[in-house]
Image 1: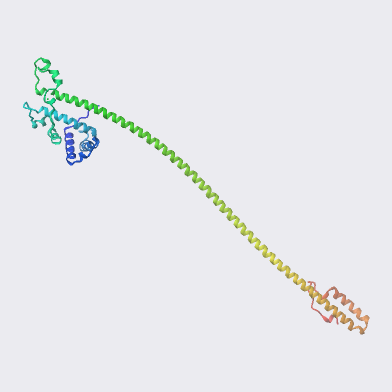
Image 2 (image 1 turned 30 degrees about the horizontal axis):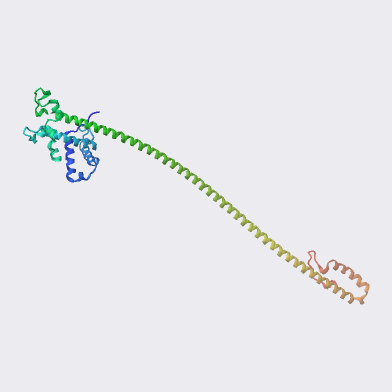
Length: 327
């Protein structure tokens, strides 16, 4: 894996953005490293990587920015060690020859004092070279060879720190992947549960729809049956009304016929009594004219009248009386 290396321009952009956030007071309000360095990383990526990915191939994370700030502090101390003169003074203008952003770092973060162990050879150096020189052979070592050993040690220390940070990043990446996989499994499980719920809800809706259609069908059948029954009842009522009307008409006709028959009977009786009365009157009135002749003439006419009393016609109605027949 190729090691990611910052360019001088990216370092300068980082320092400028850090200075802006620091001077505006925003940086002091941010409590975590991620919140502090993520805006800086986004700004650097926007200015360089997204604009020219060929010359700036690396996309920096907030962890990369955090590590870079720490490494720049050590780089500043190393350059400061190099520009220190024999009289323990510093040639600040010479600092930019070793690191282009040396004074920019000093402007943003301020001066950083060298530790005592950096002002004099440390214990490891004394053990290596001894008080008399290299391996005690009396060969001395100048400060320049010392500001290089220190730089190499600082570089190795940064390498180890970068490796540790890289391991942390890899572990964090693995952890995020595991969390992502777990979240994905949870999402799939939730989607499966949701899908089952939707299927169950769909089945319930289909069942409810079938029940509703069945109920509507039964209601329509019931309404149709009710209408048929009402029509049949109306028909029966009409037929009953017609039958009653015919029965009343027949009863009226029968009563009329009975009254007519009664009237005819009364009329026949009246005609018969009239005939008998005329017969008696005629009989007793013509006795002096000869009994035999009167009886002979009368007997045929009386027999005819007895056969048709009251002068009844063939239709049963009495004919008009004709007294001349009995005279």
